[in-house]
Image (cartoon, rainbow, N blue to C red; front, side):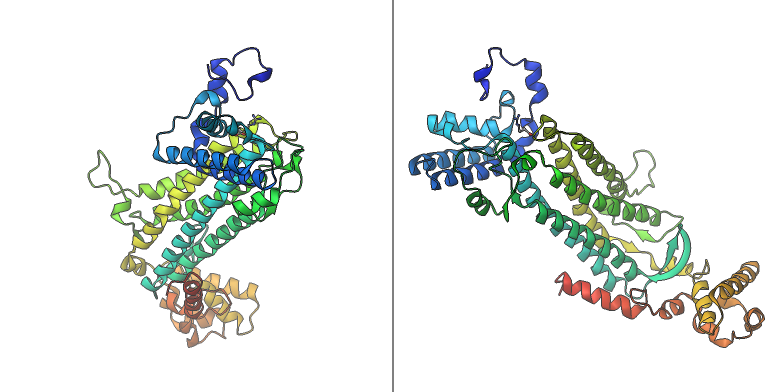
Length: 460
Ligand code: ARG
């Protein structure tokens, strides 16, 4: 039996089933490098305030670095009976340097330690995710020049609505991803206060210097209330929430592209390197990556739910329940990272099937709203114009033609103010060119937005 670091008060050994049930080292070992970094900063601070001698600090630091190297090399053996990564590292330190190692945990607790490790982990992951979001934005912006001038049907209710430029569509996702990026950075900004020094829940009587540690570890300051700090997992929940929105955005996009790559739509050919086949049907080329991006959103949203339910109803301060935060958070981050890594090359490598899109672009009366606005601009009230154009669409449907296929007298019959100029706004191309409002799909607006994105993402 390994003696527990907390064993003094106990006269009975821990039941093995409890060791298996309570351990977290099987998954929190991925925090090891950060845990060591935090411990080194803590030891340096203890020496700076005179709690450790320079020599003790040196021994501790050298020991921790050696343990870090062993962990990085994969030769370190984590022991389940030592519960978590923190106690594994500390025990290894004591075994390596002896009694001096027993001084490391002065003025801190695993409660503030685990929160510090986890915040540092979140920070690093947020930085990676932000970079990946930008890569995906670049992929969408890159498509704007690739698909310059291509018009696609825009949908509401998944029914054909109005024509839009393909570039307008790509940039719509850039906007969503930009808000996602902002949420991640906002979360990073708020979480970046050092928990270490809150100790168990009440602070410590040891004369520690928390700001010293905060500076060493790149925190913007220290948390203000030790009780709050010991219990706080808002940052993990905020991150899971930002991740859930990313997953929701990716899932919607993936669903759209799954539809677009059907024979029925025929809008898109996903790159074959991102498709897989069927074990029985020889002809199949399935968009599995898109489907899994859609499907994996479930895990991320599930993680957010788990974390919210975990935190709900916990009294102050630390409760062991909080140990359940890590697997969910790790999984959510890993999942979103994996999705983003594949989304960018998928977006860049897909092919719009221009002829197929163009062949059916005049179906569905995409220009009806622009024609209505044409009539409004001649002084007809919107409700009246809506009614009149609705009647014209009905006539065109009965004749099996697009609006531009109706003769002039059909328009004039609908309203005397309609003259040959109606043909100037009919058809997808003209409908797009008639757009004026800021943020619309007019080619000039889309072009200037694409240019702004290129500059913002440093693409040239
Ligand atoms: N492994 C624990 C966690 O992840 C660390 C803190 C444990 N603290 C305690 N007093 N048992 O939350």
